[in-house]
Image (spheres, helix red, strand yellow):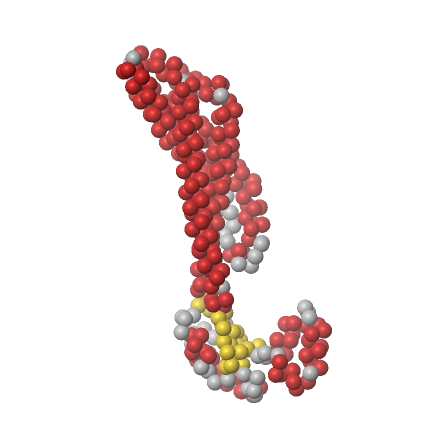
Length: 296
C-alpha cells in the first residue's frame, strides 16, 4: 500500500505534468495508428494498380463494321483465359456513354453522318491481370490501330504511393521514438519527486524491485491513461476519418476501413511503453542515487 501511495505522489505534486503527458501519449499513439493504417492500406492499392489493368485497343477507322466480330475473336485468342472481361465498344455505344453528360456534342457528331465514323473511336476494352508482353501482342492484331494500358498511365501514381508508404514508416518510427523518449524523461522526473521516500526505503534495506516499483507503477499509469485516450479517440473519430479519406478519390477507395480492434492494440502499446519507460527512468534515477550515496 505504501508503494502505491508513493507511486501516486507525482499525480499529487505535479498533476498537470502527468495529465499533459497522458494527453500527448494518446495523441501520438493515434497518430502512429493512423500512419500504420495508411502505409498498410496503400500496399493493397499499389498491388491493385500494378496487377489489375485495363487495356484499350483502338480499331482502325477504315475497319468495316462486319469485321468487328472477327477482330474481337482474334483478341480473345491472344488474351486467352476468361473472355468475359473483353468487350467491344462501337460508335453507338461510345456516343451513348457521352449522351447524358454532353448531349449537344453527341447531336453535333450524329449530324456529321458518315464522317462521324472517322471521328468517333471504336475500341476493345480488356480488364484483368496481364503480363507485360500482352500489350505488344494486341498491337499486332490486324485491324488494331493502337493500344494502351492503364499500368503505364498509373506508373507515376504507383511511384508516389510507394514513396508515401516509406515516408509514413519513417515518420511513424520517429514519432514512436519521440514518445518513448518523452516517457523516459517523465519517469526520471517522477523519480526525482519520489527521491526522499526511495532513500528511506534504501536505508530500511528494501529490495531493488521495491525501490523500482513506484517508478514502474507511475509509468504504467501514464501509459494506460494515454492508451485509453488513444483507444477512445480511435473508436470515436477514426471510423469517420477513414470514411472521409476513402471518399477523396476512387484510388483511395481501396483503402481498408478503420478496424475498431486497433483500439485495443493502441491501449496495450501505451501500457507497454509506459512500463518500459518507467523501468528505464526509475533504473537511471536509482543508479544516480546509488552513486551519490557512495560518494557521500
